[in-house]
Each structure stands twice: as C-alpha cells, then as structure tokens.
Length: 73
Image (cartoon, rainbow, N blue to C red):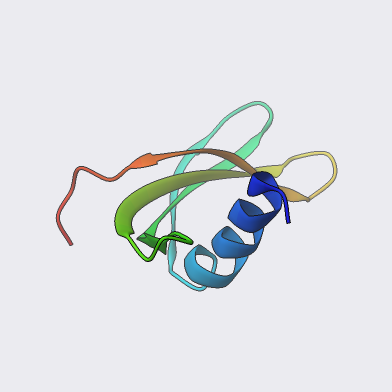
C-alpha cells in the first residue's frame, strides 16, 4: 500500500479507539482531539495528538491534522 493508505489504516486501528475530547465549535463544525500512541511500520512508537472535525452540514467527521503530542500521558 501507499504511505497515505498505511497511515489511514493505522489512524483507524490505533487512534480512533481512544477517547475524543471536544475542544471547540466553529462555524464549520465541532472540533475534537484524540491522543494516542501510533506505531509505525518500522515498529517505532510516537505519542500523537490528532484533530478531527464533525461537519455541521453533513454530520461527517474528518481528519484535520496530526502532530507529536508534547503532553505526557
């Protein structure tokens, strides 16, 4: 698979099972953060913070961004 396909599968399997925290409502939708440990294909682990949004018009939730989580769990 391509890198983006592997990342999508890893996010679905490793991150979406974690609890989501509601952080902000914008004119476009409700924003959520999900923190978790992402294990890459090389076996290395990284604490990440992912941001998701549920769209006001469609109700669909989509991935916005991800970055290393600086907070220790």
